[in-house]
Image 1 (tube, rainbow, N blue to C red):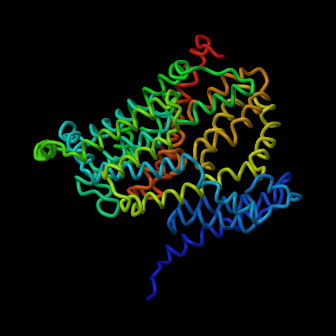
Image 2 (cartoon, one colour):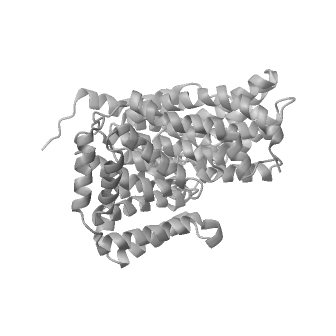
Image 3 (tube, one colour):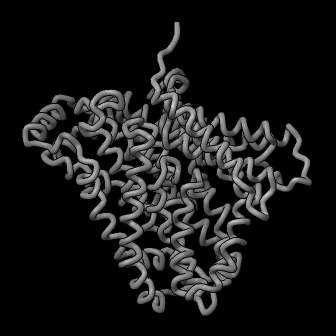
Length: 492
């Protein structure tokens, strides 16, 4: 039995292949090896494939990784033609993303969501929220944003707080309105999913502990001679921009990506009646609340308990299975979770390969002479924009910081008459909200994108629009504010 494939589908399948080949046959820039250019070509095809989605995104990642392993490009120093890469080294690199702790944290977050759903606790919470805010869909969106904002200072993993606290509630609200990925997604589900991911990205910038890459960036900067701010300093430096972005995000989504349901008093009354009909919580729901609180306590007190966020996630799942809140079969049959594990693991590996093959060093060396010719202020602005929009090439904020931050420290030092500490702070403050530009740009993105309410092409389009709006506001408000406030901020 054959499968009918439309011409559009065939075109989408061929486009990434053709694009990758076109990049490959272009003249290799001076300073890059053929191996490096092979990798860049594969990466270019990967990005276009993720935009068009001719096949499942996770499978696209597997294809890209396999090609790199076959050509033995991607491992450390594989861009050097004199380096001999063994087949065993290539496959070890290709599978390295599966050992990434953030990848497993995202995977476990899906399983925690199963607990909220199976016990009915998610529905109970959703009904309560709808009963209070259901008169307005916009009100629901602000409830989502406020929830994330409250958790952000205490949970330095945006994947953990989205997966453990926000996403399960949002999914249940969508289901209540008969809005599913394959049925009525634009009714309300897609809108709420977008508010969830965009508000999470905003709160990731507001607090130093809003996402893991923030403290990592300051740590790397400090170790390389750049003065950095503390928690309060970060908060104050981003404060006016943070207030504006938080306030406009649900409204912006409501205008650009509106839901079909606007809310009504009848819905609010219906939700109140349904909530009352649920009666008292059963033992499974009480256990789920207790386990969730254990997880939240360990996430919030990670530095005190010295337990990694991913370890906490595993503890939560063990408790859920041990208390029969979910079964081992529930764990094994969670296809979206396993799909996300494969997808994000391959992207983390591919993003890390850009540094290994020397492509990022090439970019830094290419731009350094140019920056010296610029007016210092314009050079700083160019550096900030370049640093921010390079997020398209990275599958996680952590990989992004690890791979390129120190290159930009070097570039900042090369700009004459410039305060390097202030320049680097200007660069790293937007890291949270710039994670919105792709479905893989930050820890929480694959979770929301993996719900399949929003198609890849739409996600990229919305991400580009929101990132542009956020960056314009950051430049108009954040730059003058940073110049004003930094003399009063303590750097150490």
